[in-house]
Length: 322
Image 1 (cartoon, rainbow, N blue to C red):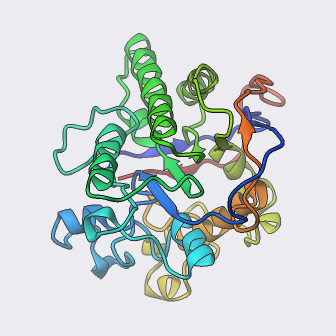
Image 2 (cartoon, one colour):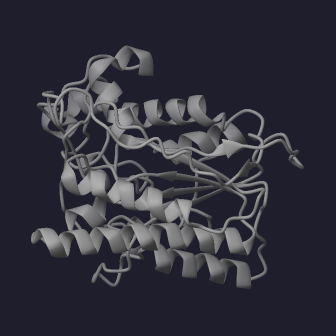
């Protein structure tokens, strides 16, 4: 559960987005928030499953999160409903587990991959709960798939293609249940394998048979990381230190909220980065305002390209998911 992701930042990666269509919503704002994902958005499922052992609060981890504060889904939930997300093992609708993959390939029985999280959600519905067609459903996967892809290029490509297929299949599954607002993040690893994974995901999403009133919001970690380096001020951040983690910087840095330090532990974002993520996602998709108009699913595949040579020569951000 401790694989590492080297985020070599690429400039100018353009991702597909949804084409809006004119229609009306029943409500002006999202009425609930449901989360599926990995350690970036785990609100305490691994913490609960391990009896409070991991991630350890003694090392500065906050309330079962894999960082020193609330993650970006918590922050959006606080703004929308006045409270953070609650782990599904604690009775809430955050089904994320640290270590989870888009593909159902994690051998750890504690970790629930995307398909297994969807099974937990199906159980939640079977218990008498209902799909909220005006709710927002956030999907955050991909890092652990790339961490664990086979080293052989051919086998690795097959593995990440399957991951993209499983990721998209989960979107279709939710759509068929009645989910109408899905925000998903892409594979957060630059480089050949990561770019291939993003292309495969784009192709798989474009082939889905979603209902005409389903809104799919695609968020690019590649673009976010690039802006963290090139213009942190535009994201409300100071210049970020990438050469040290907040934990390594010591108690004073943790007490200061890890301000100006990108990674909390060498594996996960610090709390200020999560705050910037929440702001950026809201800025792009108006999550906290009126519900965006429904979209007819039509992917504007503008293609992938990188400015200059293959990858900009910039400092690398190390990100990882437990």
